[in-house]
Image 1 (cartoon, rainbow, N blue to C red):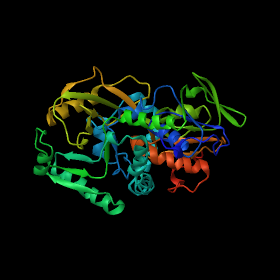
Image 2: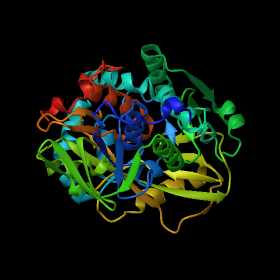
Image 3: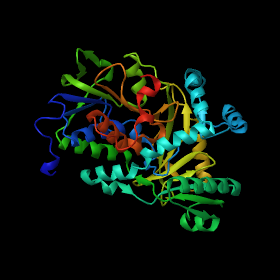
Image 4: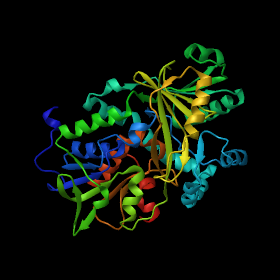
Amino acid sequence: MSAALRLPETSPAGGREVLVLGAGMVGTCTALELALRGHRVTLVDRRAPGRETSYGNAGVIQREAVEPYAFPRDWPTLISAVLGRRLDVRYQLGGLWAAAPQLLRYWWHSAPRRHRAIGRQYASLIAHATSEHQRYLALAGAEGLVQREGLRLVYRQPERLEQALHQAERLAAEYGIAFAALDSAALARAEPAFQIPLAGALHWLESWSVSDPGALVERYAGLFQQLGGRLLQGDAGSLRQQGASWQLTTQDGPVEAAQVVVALGPWADACIRRLGYRLPLFVKRGYHRHYTGGASLAMPTLDAERGYVLAPQGASLRLTTGAEIARIDAAPSPSQVQGAEIEARQLLDLGQAVEQAPWLGNRPCCADMKPVIGPATRHPGLWFNFGHGHQGFTLGPASARLLADLMQGDTPFVDAQGFLPARFGA
Protein backbone atom coordinates (compact mmCIF):
# COMPACT_ATOMS: atom_id res chain seq x y z
CA MET A 1 0.00 0.00 0.00
CA SER A 2 1.52 3.32 -1.03
CA ALA A 3 1.96 6.12 1.52
CA ALA A 4 -0.45 8.30 -0.48
CA LEU A 5 -3.30 5.93 0.38
CA ARG A 6 -2.61 5.71 4.12
CA LEU A 7 -5.10 7.25 6.50
CA PRO A 8 -3.90 10.62 7.81
CA GLU A 9 -3.84 11.40 11.52
CA THR A 10 -6.76 13.82 11.15
CA SER A 11 -9.68 13.74 8.78
CA PRO A 12 -11.89 16.25 6.95
CA ALA A 13 -14.50 15.50 9.63
CA GLY A 14 -12.27 17.05 12.28
CA GLY A 15 -11.01 13.74 13.63
CA ARG A 16 -14.51 12.45 14.45
CA GLU A 17 -15.57 9.00 13.38
CA VAL A 18 -17.90 8.32 10.46
CA LEU A 19 -19.97 5.20 11.13
CA VAL A 20 -21.09 3.04 8.22
CA LEU A 21 -23.74 0.46 9.09
CA GLY A 22 -23.76 -2.59 6.85
CA ALA A 23 -20.82 -4.47 5.32
CA GLY A 24 -22.36 -5.70 2.11
CA MET A 25 -21.08 -4.41 -1.23
CA VAL A 26 -22.74 -0.99 -0.84
CA GLY A 27 -21.69 -0.42 2.77
CA THR A 28 -18.16 -1.74 2.30
CA CYS A 29 -17.66 0.47 -0.75
CA THR A 30 -19.04 3.45 1.17
CA ALA A 31 -16.58 2.89 4.00
CA LEU A 32 -13.73 2.37 1.54
CA GLU A 33 -14.50 5.50 -0.47
CA LEU A 34 -14.63 7.65 2.66
CA ALA A 35 -11.36 6.14 3.90
CA LEU A 36 -9.71 6.82 0.54
CA ARG A 37 -10.73 10.46 0.98
CA GLY A 38 -9.06 10.67 4.37
CA HIS A 39 -12.00 10.18 6.71
CA ARG A 40 -11.74 8.06 9.83
CA VAL A 41 -14.33 5.37 9.33
CA THR A 42 -15.77 2.53 11.38
CA LEU A 43 -17.65 -0.13 9.42
CA VAL A 44 -20.11 -2.11 11.54
CA ASP A 45 -22.06 -5.26 10.77
CA ARG A 46 -23.32 -8.27 12.69
CA ARG A 47 -21.42 -10.54 10.30
CA ALA A 48 -18.21 -10.49 8.31
CA PRO A 49 -18.17 -8.38 5.10
CA GLY A 50 -20.00 -9.78 2.11
CA ARG A 51 -21.75 -12.65 3.90
CA GLU A 52 -25.37 -11.68 3.22
CA THR A 53 -27.00 -10.47 -0.02
CA SER A 54 -23.67 -9.57 -1.62
CA TYR A 55 -22.51 -13.16 -1.25
CA GLY A 56 -25.48 -14.81 -2.87
CA ASN A 57 -26.05 -13.03 -6.18
CA ALA A 58 -25.03 -14.15 -9.66
CA GLY A 59 -21.84 -12.08 -9.44
CA VAL A 60 -22.52 -9.96 -12.52
CA ILE A 61 -21.51 -6.29 -12.72
CA GLN A 62 -24.29 -5.33 -15.10
CA ARG A 63 -23.07 -2.47 -17.24
CA GLU A 64 -26.00 -3.13 -19.57
CA ALA A 65 -28.63 -2.60 -16.82
CA VAL A 66 -29.30 1.02 -17.76
CA GLU A 67 -33.01 0.66 -17.07
CA PRO A 68 -34.23 -1.01 -13.86
CA TYR A 69 -36.60 -3.96 -13.83
CA ALA A 70 -40.13 -2.70 -14.40
CA PHE A 71 -43.28 -4.15 -12.85
CA PRO A 72 -45.18 -6.17 -15.50
CA ARG A 73 -48.20 -4.26 -16.78
CA ASP A 74 -49.71 -6.64 -19.35
CA TRP A 75 -52.54 -8.85 -18.17
CA PRO A 76 -51.21 -12.24 -19.41
CA THR A 77 -47.97 -11.77 -17.46
CA LEU A 78 -49.77 -10.56 -14.34
CA ILE A 79 -52.29 -13.40 -14.41
CA SER A 80 -49.62 -16.05 -14.90
CA ALA A 81 -47.65 -14.59 -11.98
CA VAL A 82 -50.72 -14.55 -9.72
CA LEU A 83 -51.44 -18.18 -10.62
CA GLY A 84 -47.85 -19.19 -9.84
CA ARG A 85 -47.08 -20.24 -13.40
CA ARG A 86 -43.92 -18.13 -13.76
CA LEU A 87 -40.47 -18.98 -12.46
CA ASP A 88 -39.10 -15.45 -12.60
CA VAL A 89 -41.47 -14.22 -9.89
CA ARG A 90 -43.15 -16.04 -7.02
CA TYR A 91 -44.81 -14.81 -3.87
CA GLN A 92 -45.96 -15.77 -0.39
CA LEU A 93 -49.36 -14.36 0.53
CA GLY A 94 -48.18 -12.74 3.76
CA GLY A 95 -45.34 -10.96 2.00
CA LEU A 96 -47.54 -9.92 -0.90
CA TRP A 97 -50.07 -8.36 1.49
CA ALA A 98 -47.38 -6.58 3.52
CA ALA A 99 -45.72 -5.16 0.39
CA ALA A 100 -48.97 -4.29 -1.43
CA PRO A 101 -48.70 -0.47 -1.01
CA GLN A 102 -45.10 -0.47 -2.25
CA LEU A 103 -45.92 -2.84 -5.12
CA LEU A 104 -48.75 -0.58 -6.22
CA ARG A 105 -46.34 2.38 -6.33
CA TYR A 106 -43.85 0.16 -8.17
CA TRP A 107 -46.54 -0.65 -10.76
CA TRP A 108 -47.37 3.07 -11.11
CA HIS A 109 -43.73 4.07 -11.65
CA SER A 110 -43.38 1.29 -14.25
CA ALA A 111 -45.69 3.01 -16.73
CA PRO A 112 -43.63 3.44 -19.94
CA ARG A 113 -43.23 7.22 -19.77
CA ARG A 114 -42.31 7.25 -16.10
CA HIS A 115 -40.04 4.21 -16.45
CA ARG A 116 -38.09 5.83 -19.28
CA ALA A 117 -37.52 8.95 -17.16
CA ILE A 118 -36.38 6.82 -14.24
CA GLY A 119 -34.11 4.91 -16.59
CA ARG A 120 -32.33 8.08 -17.67
CA GLN A 121 -31.48 8.85 -14.05
CA TYR A 122 -30.60 5.25 -13.24
CA ALA A 123 -28.32 5.01 -16.27
CA SER A 124 -26.21 7.91 -15.01
CA LEU A 125 -24.94 5.66 -12.20
CA ILE A 126 -24.80 2.46 -14.24
CA ALA A 127 -22.57 4.27 -16.75
CA HIS A 128 -19.85 4.30 -14.07
CA ALA A 129 -20.39 0.79 -12.72
CA THR A 130 -17.41 -0.95 -14.29
CA SER A 131 -15.04 2.03 -14.17
CA GLU A 132 -15.65 2.58 -10.45
CA HIS A 133 -15.22 -1.13 -9.74
CA GLN A 134 -12.01 -1.05 -11.75
CA ARG A 135 -10.64 1.69 -9.50
CA TYR A 136 -11.16 -0.49 -6.43
CA LEU A 137 -10.04 -3.68 -8.17
CA ALA A 138 -6.67 -2.15 -8.97
CA LEU A 139 -6.16 -0.82 -5.44
CA ALA A 140 -7.26 -4.09 -3.82
CA GLY A 141 -5.31 -6.33 -6.19
CA ALA A 142 -8.52 -8.20 -6.98
CA GLU A 143 -8.49 -8.25 -10.80
CA GLY A 144 -8.12 -12.03 -10.75
CA LEU A 145 -11.68 -12.40 -9.47
CA VAL A 146 -13.17 -10.65 -12.51
CA GLN A 147 -13.89 -11.86 -16.02
CA ARG A 148 -14.84 -9.43 -18.78
CA GLU A 149 -16.63 -11.77 -21.16
CA GLY A 150 -20.08 -10.20 -20.83
CA LEU A 151 -23.54 -11.53 -20.01
CA ARG A 152 -25.54 -13.78 -22.31
CA LEU A 153 -29.34 -14.00 -22.49
CA VAL A 154 -30.57 -17.13 -24.26
CA TYR A 155 -33.99 -17.49 -25.88
CA ARG A 156 -36.04 -20.50 -26.84
CA GLN A 157 -38.62 -18.82 -29.07
CA PRO A 158 -37.56 -16.81 -32.15
CA GLU A 159 -40.18 -14.11 -31.53
CA ARG A 160 -38.90 -13.53 -27.99
CA LEU A 161 -35.35 -13.24 -29.30
CA GLU A 162 -36.49 -10.76 -31.93
CA GLN A 163 -38.21 -8.63 -29.28
CA ALA A 164 -35.09 -8.69 -27.10
CA LEU A 165 -32.83 -7.64 -29.96
CA HIS A 166 -35.18 -4.80 -30.86
CA GLN A 167 -35.02 -3.57 -27.27
CA ALA A 168 -31.22 -3.95 -27.27
CA GLU A 169 -30.98 -1.80 -30.39
CA ARG A 170 -32.93 0.94 -28.62
CA LEU A 171 -30.70 0.79 -25.53
CA ALA A 172 -27.58 0.78 -27.68
CA ALA A 173 -28.80 3.86 -29.54
CA GLU A 174 -29.81 5.75 -26.39
CA TYR A 175 -27.03 4.72 -24.02
CA GLY A 176 -24.21 3.38 -26.17
CA ILE A 177 -24.29 -0.13 -24.71
CA ALA A 178 -22.59 -2.69 -26.95
CA PHE A 179 -24.19 -6.05 -27.74
CA ALA A 180 -23.97 -8.90 -30.21
CA ALA A 181 -26.68 -11.17 -31.59
CA LEU A 182 -26.17 -14.91 -31.92
CA ASP A 183 -28.41 -17.10 -34.02
CA SER A 184 -29.10 -20.71 -33.13
CA ALA A 185 -26.00 -22.09 -34.85
CA ALA A 186 -23.67 -19.45 -33.43
CA LEU A 187 -25.00 -20.06 -29.92
CA ALA A 188 -24.52 -23.81 -30.28
CA ARG A 189 -20.88 -23.22 -31.25
CA ALA A 190 -20.34 -20.78 -28.39
CA GLU A 191 -21.94 -23.04 -25.77
CA PRO A 192 -21.68 -26.66 -26.91
CA ALA A 193 -22.90 -27.91 -23.52
CA PHE A 194 -26.50 -26.96 -24.32
CA GLN A 195 -28.55 -30.11 -24.81
CA ILE A 196 -31.54 -28.58 -26.60
CA PRO A 197 -31.73 -26.29 -29.64
CA LEU A 198 -32.31 -22.64 -28.83
CA ALA A 199 -33.42 -19.74 -31.01
CA GLY A 200 -30.31 -17.71 -30.22
CA ALA A 201 -28.93 -15.24 -27.75
CA LEU A 202 -28.36 -11.60 -26.91
CA HIS A 203 -24.81 -11.06 -25.69
CA TRP A 204 -24.20 -7.89 -23.66
CA LEU A 205 -20.50 -7.27 -24.23
CA GLU A 206 -19.60 -4.74 -21.53
CA SER A 207 -20.80 -6.52 -18.41
CA TRP A 208 -18.32 -8.24 -16.09
CA SER A 209 -18.64 -11.29 -13.89
CA VAL A 210 -17.03 -12.22 -10.58
CA SER A 211 -16.00 -15.77 -9.72
CA ASP A 212 -16.68 -15.27 -6.01
CA PRO A 213 -18.91 -12.27 -5.12
CA GLY A 214 -18.39 -12.59 -1.39
CA ALA A 215 -14.62 -12.71 -1.82
CA LEU A 216 -14.68 -9.47 -3.80
CA VAL A 217 -16.45 -7.69 -0.94
CA GLU A 218 -13.84 -9.17 1.42
CA ARG A 219 -11.04 -7.78 -0.75
CA TYR A 220 -12.58 -4.32 -0.69
CA ALA A 221 -13.01 -4.60 3.07
CA GLY A 222 -9.38 -5.68 3.39
CA LEU A 223 -8.27 -2.57 1.49
CA PHE A 224 -10.45 -0.48 3.78
CA GLN A 225 -8.66 -1.93 6.81
CA GLN A 226 -5.24 -1.37 5.23
CA LEU A 227 -6.19 2.28 4.98
CA GLY A 228 -6.74 2.36 8.73
CA GLY A 229 -10.49 1.77 8.75
CA ARG A 230 -12.01 -0.13 11.66
CA LEU A 231 -14.23 -3.16 11.13
CA LEU A 232 -16.40 -4.01 14.12
CA GLN A 233 -19.27 -6.34 14.92
CA GLY A 234 -22.41 -4.75 16.25
CA ASP A 235 -26.16 -4.44 15.98
CA ALA A 236 -27.62 -1.51 14.05
CA GLY A 237 -30.62 -1.70 16.36
CA SER A 238 -28.53 -0.03 19.06
CA LEU A 239 -28.07 3.15 16.99
CA ARG A 240 -29.19 6.26 18.87
CA GLN A 241 -28.71 9.99 18.63
CA GLN A 242 -26.92 11.62 21.54
CA GLY A 243 -26.87 15.38 21.17
CA ALA A 244 -24.93 16.20 18.01
CA SER A 245 -23.46 12.70 17.79
CA TRP A 246 -24.56 9.18 16.92
CA GLN A 247 -23.76 6.23 19.17
CA LEU A 248 -23.70 2.51 18.52
CA THR A 249 -22.90 -0.48 20.71
CA THR A 250 -20.38 -2.98 19.32
CA GLN A 251 -18.60 -6.03 20.69
CA ASP A 252 -15.59 -3.77 21.25
CA GLY A 253 -17.65 -1.25 23.19
CA PRO A 254 -19.57 1.87 22.21
CA VAL A 255 -18.53 4.00 19.24
CA GLU A 256 -19.54 7.57 18.55
CA ALA A 257 -19.64 9.64 15.38
CA ALA A 258 -20.83 12.98 14.12
CA GLN A 259 -22.05 11.26 10.95
CA VAL A 260 -23.56 7.84 10.29
CA VAL A 261 -24.40 6.13 7.02
CA VAL A 262 -27.19 3.55 6.91
CA ALA A 263 -26.17 1.06 4.21
CA LEU A 264 -28.01 -1.96 5.57
CA GLY A 265 -29.57 -3.19 2.36
CA PRO A 266 -32.81 -5.08 3.10
CA TRP A 267 -32.48 -4.30 6.83
CA ALA A 268 -32.35 -0.53 6.29
CA ASP A 269 -36.11 -0.13 6.61
CA ALA A 270 -36.19 -1.54 10.14
CA CYS A 271 -33.35 0.78 11.17
CA ILE A 272 -34.77 4.02 9.79
CA ARG A 273 -38.32 3.27 10.96
CA ARG A 274 -37.07 3.51 14.52
CA LEU A 275 -36.00 7.05 13.63
CA GLY A 276 -39.40 7.96 12.19
CA TYR A 277 -38.77 7.47 8.45
CA ARG A 278 -41.32 5.72 6.24
CA LEU A 279 -39.94 5.07 2.78
CA PRO A 280 -41.59 2.83 0.14
CA LEU A 281 -39.12 -0.03 0.64
CA PHE A 282 -39.79 -3.74 0.21
CA VAL A 283 -37.87 -6.97 -0.21
CA LYS A 284 -37.47 -9.32 -3.14
CA ARG A 285 -35.97 -12.57 -2.02
CA GLY A 286 -33.79 -14.86 -4.11
CA TYR A 287 -32.26 -18.33 -3.90
CA HIS A 288 -29.12 -19.96 -5.20
CA ARG A 289 -27.58 -23.41 -5.34
CA HIS A 290 -24.24 -24.72 -6.63
CA TYR A 291 -23.63 -27.73 -8.86
CA THR A 292 -20.47 -29.65 -9.66
CA GLY A 293 -19.50 -32.55 -11.90
CA GLY A 294 -21.57 -31.38 -14.83
CA ALA A 295 -21.20 -28.99 -17.74
CA SER A 296 -19.77 -25.50 -17.57
CA LEU A 297 -20.51 -22.26 -19.39
CA ALA A 298 -18.28 -19.61 -20.91
CA MET A 299 -20.03 -16.77 -19.05
CA PRO A 300 -23.07 -15.99 -16.89
CA THR A 301 -26.19 -16.96 -18.79
CA LEU A 302 -29.77 -15.88 -18.22
CA ASP A 303 -32.44 -18.27 -19.43
CA ALA A 304 -34.55 -15.27 -20.35
CA GLU A 305 -37.86 -17.07 -20.84
CA ARG A 306 -37.57 -19.05 -17.60
CA GLY A 307 -36.06 -16.39 -15.34
CA TYR A 308 -32.97 -17.92 -13.73
CA VAL A 309 -29.23 -17.38 -14.17
CA LEU A 310 -26.41 -19.92 -14.45
CA ALA A 311 -23.02 -18.44 -13.56
CA PRO A 312 -19.60 -20.10 -13.34
CA GLN A 313 -18.38 -19.69 -9.74
CA GLY A 314 -14.92 -21.18 -9.32
CA ALA A 315 -15.17 -24.95 -9.81
CA SER A 316 -18.98 -24.97 -9.64
CA LEU A 317 -21.96 -23.56 -11.48
CA ARG A 318 -24.27 -21.28 -9.46
CA LEU A 319 -27.97 -21.24 -10.24
CA THR A 320 -29.74 -18.10 -9.01
CA THR A 321 -33.48 -17.53 -9.12
CA GLY A 322 -35.64 -14.56 -9.96
CA ALA A 323 -37.70 -12.69 -7.35
CA GLU A 324 -39.87 -13.96 -4.52
CA ILE A 325 -42.13 -11.47 -2.76
CA ALA A 326 -42.11 -12.52 0.88
CA ARG A 327 -41.44 -11.14 4.33
CA ILE A 328 -37.77 -10.87 5.12
CA ASP A 329 -38.08 -13.41 7.94
CA ALA A 330 -40.48 -15.82 6.23
CA ALA A 331 -39.60 -19.50 5.96
CA PRO A 332 -37.95 -20.60 2.70
CA SER A 333 -40.20 -21.75 -0.10
CA PRO A 334 -38.28 -24.22 -2.31
CA SER A 335 -40.61 -24.28 -5.30
CA GLN A 336 -38.88 -21.52 -7.26
CA VAL A 337 -35.38 -22.94 -7.09
CA GLN A 338 -36.69 -26.46 -7.67
CA GLY A 339 -38.51 -25.31 -10.78
CA ALA A 340 -35.41 -23.50 -12.03
CA GLU A 341 -33.32 -26.63 -11.50
CA ILE A 342 -35.76 -28.70 -13.55
CA GLU A 343 -35.54 -26.20 -16.42
CA ALA A 344 -31.75 -25.94 -16.16
CA ARG A 345 -31.32 -29.72 -16.30
CA GLN A 346 -33.18 -29.74 -19.60
CA LEU A 347 -30.78 -27.11 -20.89
CA LEU A 348 -27.51 -28.76 -19.82
CA ASP A 349 -25.97 -31.35 -17.52
CA LEU A 350 -25.98 -29.62 -14.13
CA GLY A 351 -24.23 -32.39 -12.23
CA GLN A 352 -24.77 -32.79 -8.50
CA ALA A 353 -26.06 -30.17 -6.08
CA VAL A 354 -23.44 -29.10 -3.54
CA GLU A 355 -25.66 -27.80 -0.73
CA GLN A 356 -28.28 -29.82 1.10
CA ALA A 357 -30.62 -26.81 0.96
CA PRO A 358 -30.55 -23.71 -1.28
CA TRP A 359 -29.15 -20.43 0.03
CA LEU A 360 -31.74 -17.68 0.60
CA GLY A 361 -31.12 -13.93 0.54
CA ASN A 362 -32.98 -10.62 0.31
CA ARG A 363 -32.77 -7.80 -2.22
CA PRO A 364 -33.48 -4.27 -0.93
CA CYS A 365 -35.97 -2.62 -3.28
CA CYS A 366 -37.55 0.82 -3.56
CA ALA A 367 -40.92 1.47 -5.21
CA ASP A 368 -39.50 3.95 -7.74
CA MET A 369 -36.70 1.50 -8.68
CA LYS A 370 -33.88 3.90 -7.74
CA PRO A 371 -31.53 3.69 -4.78
CA VAL A 372 -31.83 6.14 -1.91
CA ILE A 373 -28.55 8.07 -1.64
CA GLY A 374 -27.98 11.23 0.37
CA PRO A 375 -28.80 13.08 3.60
CA ALA A 376 -31.85 12.34 5.71
CA THR A 377 -33.99 15.46 5.98
CA ARG A 378 -34.75 15.47 9.72
CA HIS A 379 -31.54 14.26 11.40
CA PRO A 380 -28.26 16.14 10.87
CA GLY A 381 -25.40 13.75 10.24
CA LEU A 382 -27.65 10.87 9.11
CA TRP A 383 -27.05 9.57 5.59
CA PHE A 384 -28.73 6.89 3.48
CA ASN A 385 -27.27 4.53 0.87
CA PHE A 386 -29.64 1.62 0.21
CA GLY A 387 -32.54 0.43 -1.93
CA HIS A 388 -30.48 -0.78 -4.91
CA GLY A 389 -32.79 -3.69 -5.78
CA HIS A 390 -31.06 -6.16 -8.07
CA GLN A 391 -28.02 -3.93 -8.62
CA GLY A 392 -26.33 -3.36 -5.26
CA PHE A 393 -23.40 -5.52 -6.32
CA THR A 394 -23.14 -3.57 -9.59
CA LEU A 395 -23.58 -0.09 -8.11
CA GLY A 396 -21.64 -0.33 -4.84
CA PRO A 397 -18.60 1.74 -5.88
CA ALA A 398 -20.54 4.28 -7.96
CA SER A 399 -23.08 4.82 -5.16
CA ALA A 400 -20.25 5.20 -2.65
CA ARG A 401 -18.62 7.87 -4.79
CA LEU A 402 -21.88 9.81 -5.09
CA LEU A 403 -22.54 9.64 -1.35
CA ALA A 404 -18.98 10.72 -0.50
CA ASP A 405 -19.32 13.71 -2.84
CA LEU A 406 -22.50 14.73 -1.04
CA MET A 407 -21.04 14.21 2.44
CA GLN A 408 -18.05 16.38 1.64
CA GLY A 409 -20.08 19.11 -0.04
CA ASP A 410 -18.37 18.46 -3.37
CA THR A 411 -20.07 18.76 -6.73
CA PRO A 412 -21.58 15.29 -7.29
CA PHE A 413 -19.99 13.38 -10.15
CA VAL A 414 -23.51 12.62 -11.44
CA ASP A 415 -26.76 14.52 -10.89
CA ALA A 416 -27.87 13.41 -7.41
CA GLN A 417 -31.37 14.90 -7.48
CA GLY A 418 -33.21 11.74 -8.47
CA PHE A 419 -31.57 9.66 -5.73
CA LEU A 420 -31.93 11.94 -2.70
CA PRO A 421 -34.10 10.82 0.25
CA ALA A 422 -35.84 14.20 -0.03
CA ARG A 423 -37.82 12.88 -3.00
CA PHE A 424 -39.90 11.06 -0.40
CA GLY A 425 -39.88 13.90 2.10
CA ALA A 426 -37.27 11.95 4.07
